[in-house]
Length: 249
Image 1 (cartoon, rainbow, N blue to C red):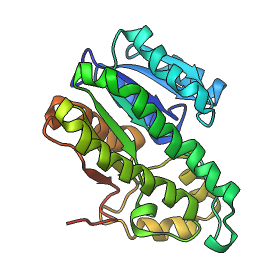
Image 2 (image 1 turned 120 degrees about the vertical axis):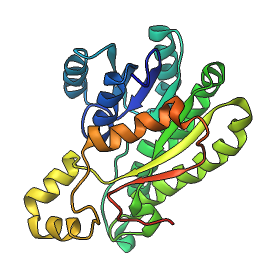
Image 3 (image 1 turned 180 degrees about the vertical axis):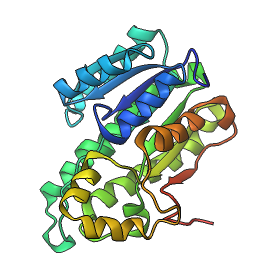
Image 4 (image 1 turned 90 degrees about the vertical axis):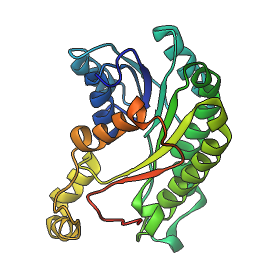
């Protein structure tokens, strides 16, 4: 129970990797507020995870900037405190760079970068009180560069830069900020595997551990570590939870 008595916000947690994080958190003892624009899926996920501990769902379109401070307020009203903020939500359009429009860039930044920035600002005073932490999600697509990932990679690297600044500025307040870059079996990857099995198998063959990550037991477990006292001296880091695809040492 590494997160016993801790409280968390996890964005985009109705499905996929973020759902895996929320699942790992509640099983580790945390109370979790799931935030997602998918109402039916979000409610189903909250009902599913309620068997393990306190989980609530808040339907919010993260592209609506005016609604973002209310997420933090709602979490504090529910739980009385805020210990952990996980910014995992992200949407994007996959296009070659020359075909990427301003609209496509706006989709990536409106669903990923701006919510991360504004939720971090809203959460900061509460995280100071609890000496809490932020876990933001990046991608190897941003670090290494990948075809058709111009908007997605740009938004993710903007989030990583923001996270490094926050880690430096917020450290004196006891607030830690780290990144996770995952490779996991999300709904998008499942769809890719279904329609392009040869490309999927080719990508897996490039993973040193020769498998794709599990959203809960691989990505979620790593997030639990970063959010727990075991990582009390870890901040400003990008943790590659991708089976060894991106090697940073």
